[in-house]
Image (cartoon, rainbow, N blue to C red; front, side):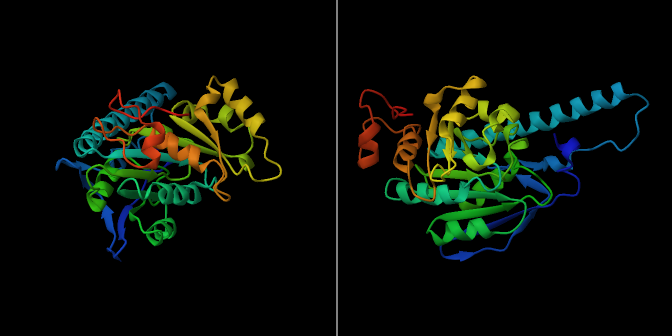
Length: 299
């Protein structure tokens, strides 16, 4: 949690909107006004005790209490995000992985595949730089960069400000590319409708056993970089099964080569609610069941 990893100590969050027509100056987040217009202090400003407790039990009790307050506050803001998004008919997807797993490359492929189907927007999360946001902007997509400074994850209030900046159109898809990390992001609800976790074969097949909470919280798991000669997809699937995950919720892809991207697009579209009777477009026709109001899942 925050007190343990130090991600709230002195961290400053900056939000920069990079539209396809220009770049806005970054704002520094101290307190945030959520998408419903309520003002809240950033959870990084949550009071931390610097006194030295007389007993380990007292310190542990304080830490548990602090963690509960931070997560409870974040969950309330996440529900407001979720309600705001639902009111606009916006589908938000949270994309998570370790650094270097191929999130941004796979995101570029996904955006290209969905561009003719939905209005798109991206919330980029990194500790520093706007490198990934620039890549997304050059791909023609509206994007906002959230730099967390020393922070190792995004939180619901940061995403609320990011949503205000990009102002997604009704009926659009918003993809949140999280800070590269398999620990803290698993704890923080952002108000998303679905979570996708990417595991690159180069990371080692034991990652699900080491970070089970992240993988158990995923709606879809992607095994990336299967184009590499050393890729052992079956071994990774076995490791996921060992922690009780259904192989049916796992797709093997290569962001570099584009392998498995069509299946990924179908899986994403399969989770997007639609008004009754809307079944236009090639991707929609693949998975839409006219007897229901939503797409069928295809993973």
